[in-house]
Length: 577
Image (cartoon, rainbow, N blue to C red):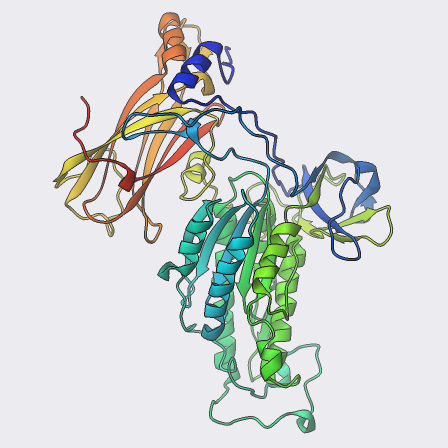
């Protein structure tokens, strides 16, 4: 076997010429694997004033699982004031027209967490949605430079959309938050009592005392309240919201490091009864399954009640809507605690809540351990973390389920994307384990057919089409080649291009091609120095704005190289022959 080093000297010289940038070293990022072979626990440690406590050591912590001490396998502190490792100083390369390089990526992939803003219009009154939108614009102005943020929207009808992929560009974030893609609107399943005080039956709040009739304020009778309808609405909202959490966790599952999900929402009750006294829904098991999937994807949720203090200011403490809010808070607290996050309630400083969540999510300790109980019995395992210093507050996830890899609590296998599929998602990180540059030619005229190998969305792709030709030059130092008995060097990798609609982020077309070269010694040495030249074609609709996500994946090592290119940056011209 011949395992090629990541950067061979000969190609390093060529890379500096072609790309103007050398490959940079990256710090290892612990991946979260919540199963019985290894558990990863993130721990936020703060003092009495809520300030992060730094410089603790492994010896300061004790970790227990089901009450039994665990031996840490690794320990690491993460700090927001730590600067990421920078690549060697180099000028941005001067490339020919229509030529793009992932080696020229302005931001190296770092160990800093990714941050997700989710604006939940399904569970939030319309009047509050516009307030959240304005506060988020204020929040962007306060985000520390270099912070990666993505924006998701859960629409009033329960549709989850990626509004803006991960970016460090404040203007892109502001544009996304202000855009119509945020899907603000009147929730189709809104509680009937969102805007008025109404009485509520005792069955809604199991384990809590219902207010006495004498303590209730007079209620307007203009809006009828039907608890059966309310149960159905809350159940549907809950299903949509839990599905959104699941989709997000799967979307980021292949991205390294921690993800902080800041969830602006009014929430929903975890469990409700109808007016006949029967349980009309109970989301306890669904939430447990979602929490486990979030844990495996290293997602920590920070719920923020976007209704702020408005409900408390406008309604009596014993009013139905305030009591409903209290029950919704319990559910949101349960989700936060299960993932190691923190809730933000009864505050009008929505931008400050987001900033505090990002700061909390950037200052933490990571401990990994191998459980002494290696049985994959799907049972709940409790986690307890202690620190040997007084008056400190700890925030971490307190449980996980001992599940076999890639399964859920229901026993069903987890739909898992391949490394290339994950890396090719719009807005995902742009890895540089494989360096390449690509020249893209956009045909000046339209065509009635698509190039071979296209996988179009039939609803989005209608003729006429514009043809694109991609000519790759790939540094194969990032691809493993093995010397076989036939005397040739064999490798296997794939290269792909996805076409996304800029407006709604939908995938409209894609093409993936495989390469299995068998190279004689002289051809192999020549390609090490000069790179591998490959060609690919793709089509896109003649009208509209689109983004190309282009990637190369080594099937042996899993190494990846990806870049995003807006079609608007490509000058139409005939493809080179």
